[in-house]
Length: 399
Image (tube, rainbow, N blue to C red; front, top):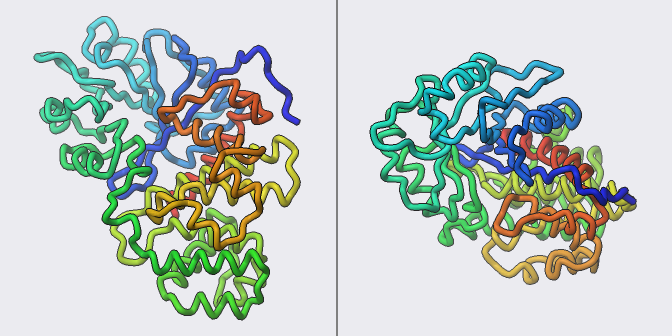
């Protein structure tokens, strides 16, 4: 079992996805609790010891900096120019007393994002090119002049739903963060429902170990489904390099366990004709990978690891399909521990899923007590978080 850190000296780390206009992840916003006035030491550890750079997968990392005058992290390996964006309170970005500190950070390769709107008549430092604003406070029209004056991309946070997402996009924002993926446009919630219904049937066949002929027959009924399966099988996100030429080859060569995981992920994939990616795809991938990683840390069996992955992947199906989760999973004849975790957050898997949901920097904060209840500590949780996002970032950019 995981050793508990009774001193709770290690802070809680959160990574919030930041997506572009097509819902593809373009950055990860780092949040720490409790907030450190400096933050340099922890950031250095996250990059040097916890391999945060691997989790980014080339994405930008947005880091809040309360006081640029005391922020000076040290990295063992050089960070590419502009990959770290420092989110600095807007008052520092117009204060002549802070210009030397910010200029020094800018010269070291950090991008500077002003957090908030400057006062009327204020002059922003020339190396500040982006704004980060809270979409929930209702002042977005006041930002119009700055959104057009600065190069961007500008970040809108706390976007609550699809309608607010569209409003922010119209205003000129190009980076988006918030719970909008969990509150999609109800008119689109069952788009491609026929293909996804076949996917659920396929998952049921795989679960009962149906022969390859039955699986292939169902796959051949849906061109969009066939296309997505081959696309995902060939994706570098799964580390598989062989050429797949037919369904039977894929099924026999890959094995049922990996096929089942791809089918689960495929539920959230973009279908031909979709202009944008499904924003739920990388979220579901992160949940599944984090569930598996945490289950491994609390000494789960191989079979339990698979069930942890399934639990995380299926935890967003009700949002995806716009129907009660119980009605979706009942035909799949899932094990009782998965059903209990998904519907009641009970059992070991339920406690781990509760941690995953609270880790998403949502309105329900994660506490050290939640980690302890699940058999984890803050350090192990951080390791699992970064591992999960490392896979989810590859899924987001390749799907």
